[in-house]
Image (cartoon, rainbow, N blue to C red; front, side, top):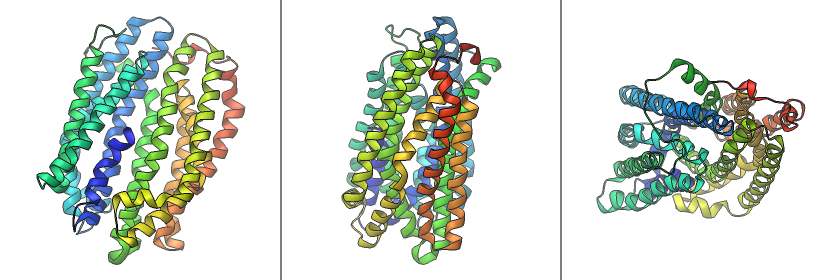
Amino acid sequence: MNVLYSIVDRIYVGNIPVTGADALAGVGVCAPIVTLLSSFGTLFGVGGSVLFSVRLGAGDEKGAKRILANSFTMMILTAVALTVVFLLTKDQLLNWFGASEITFPYANTYMTIYTAGTVFALISMGMNFFITAQGFPMLGMTTTLIGAVINIVLDPVFIFLFDMDVAGAALATVIAQMSSCAFVLLTLRRKKMRVPLGVVKPEASVGKQIAKIGFSPFMISATDSIIIIALNAVLQFYGGPENGDALVTAATIVQSYMLLITSPMLGITSGSQPLISYNYGANRPDRIRKTFFWVFMLCFCFTATMFLISRIMPQYFVRIFTDNPEYGELAVWGIRTFTLMIVPLSFQYVIVDGLTALGMTRIALTMSMIRKSLYFGLTCVLPMIFVAKNAFYAEPLADGTAAALSCVVFFFIYRKYLRGEGGLKDIKI
């Protein structure tokens, strides 16, 4: 459902008569900025929920409530600040990040409306982690389901029936996020919640611990956005007026396809984090070992299946976005290129998110940043040496290298936690 939530706007926008391809490129320029905004929800959501789960596992409900309230308050303040900053700077940002004269009007319209709903987006995503952490994963899934269904229903109404085009797609998304936000807040206030939601004055000591744990997943998400921004800018620059918009459009479709792979993997690894953190607090390394085994197996089987699908039938996915033969052929090639190393990538996802759940955020962040640095560097260098579309090879080269390094780290450092040698002393509030 999260995949649908993320790409349904692009599907409808790409099918707008006459201007669909240009509008899709404009929305594609906005996509990494949207992800960058959402990453702040991860900062407080993952950081807070990991500490929250550790406290619940240790039987400290008072400490858990304190973490929940601080996470919520800091999320609201951050969302308001981000809304102001991005509304004031969006024009310059869009020009920097790959918008051309043709695609800028579409990007500007979408970004203006979406940014106005930043508060709802951050709260619905960030606070949803605390629903799952309290043992209600189905309610957590319902949050995403509500937003996705509303977005899917409203998109064609606003875009085609009301003839709002890109503005309709953005408005549908904001309304969907408002609905998800309302559901999350009402759910966390229900009596069945072991630790209900409250609001407090932010505490610096608690905020520091939340940010320390959440910084790794935040940087992972934020740097993903930066890399996509760099990719769009590089493709636009080296592609020139003739091919720049076509390459950005193809890259938008490819990134949408990658969400079919990375979002389920993130669901699996994020779903394991409360289990790992809770049993870490409860001093149950046997349960941690079982969790890791099944997470590895699930991610491996899933990515192996998606690798085969990517070789056989990516053209069917591409046709959902565009019927332009040139764009379609380029996007199919891009999908097959991007997915060359998705199986090894699954191992890094498991290891990095597991490290975060155990409080080993410095190592987790280092592993992630090595991959992102390789990806960013190759994205910039490859088009300089070869042609613009060779920037697509940066993804598999970075994925394969980083996965090998993560496996080495897992064997030599991580295994002590699987043997139960790590202790709760490493994470304190």
